[in-house]
Length: 261
Length: 261
Image (cartoon, rainbow over all chains, first blue to last red; front, side, top):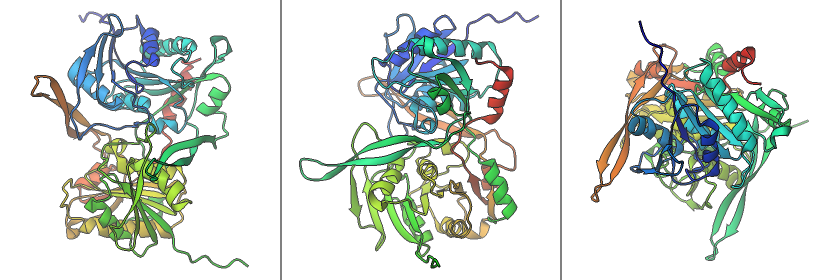
């Protein structure tokens, strides 16, 4: 007769703001006691890295003591590299859960595409590791993570105690509000929103042009089902995400029209 | 009475292998005569950059004469930066079509997630610019693009002459075969395949460890509907792609179970 397994789950933690960002420290606080934690995170900020991987140069990885008795490693790689290194060289197995964040700044709507935080989580999901990315709608280093930490703990417990999907991937965003103003959690779809871009054109001391990316965020999606709506209405947003990017509706349309032969 | 517009379409061309790669030159050949071409591409290889954008440092952009009378600009940015710069600072409008590639190496199945080629195309699609990414299953600089160029021309003509979707986004991969061995074009879904990763651990002259990413590609998806199947069976694969990553099936399941409140 098989004995019931009572070993605690192994939880991998990473981020894209770098291992010294307050967000990852708050995520560790949120998850303490829920499993054996191992941190593998970039040694510097990697925001906006999307799903970048390092293929043209080698990676470094060093053990660091930053989080008391929690095992932690910093790497020279991207968030996606961190997940790959963690599985192959640190854990030598797949963790039971991968958590990424808590990001300083929003990753709702289209931001998911550019987000290193969510790409790390997606990398884990591709590897059949249930995974969650967390982001707080406050870019500042001194952001208040109190409510974010509370709700992250709640969501992680729910995921650990319910068998969901081996590719489970959630994009969680927290409004920048005190605990008592948050109305709860809403499961949402990704809003169709984008940045209306503008480059700030400047001249260097030699008179040559250079460009800074700037842009205004615009939500084109007025549905109440979206993450943007939920956050504006003081809810924590949870978007279930997939890595199959096939547009099946368009596929059916193209096949019906027999356009490509 | 409005007169019929006869102006030719504006076609933006970019890639992730860099502006000097043979693949982009072959894409320009494939599309010559089909519109006014403008090239905005990275000044160095950017493979594996995913949907990275440059936010921590400024960008440079310089006009270059590489393709005869075709206007061309090289930038210090990522493929996604190139699309943004092209719209805002070169064209001062949206092009009618965006083409990315021809990539040296496969971007079928899960590779789409890591691909700078496909991220540039996706960026255009988010901006409501119909867009196609092209990749040849041959990594070599001296790869033979004859068949790829022929089929790229055919697919681009089809897209230009049929009103499809303003967010149209196609991931096109060419088998590395001579013309007479290619059986035609197939509309496919993205295969569930991944890299079984392994890092090559080495010691530097100081005796410190460093890691090279390596990995073996494994296809777990045995369906005949996939891009991997099509390519293995000597077809050009066309996967219609979307940027809404919401997993609607999982969303419905989570809502039904009322797990998050």
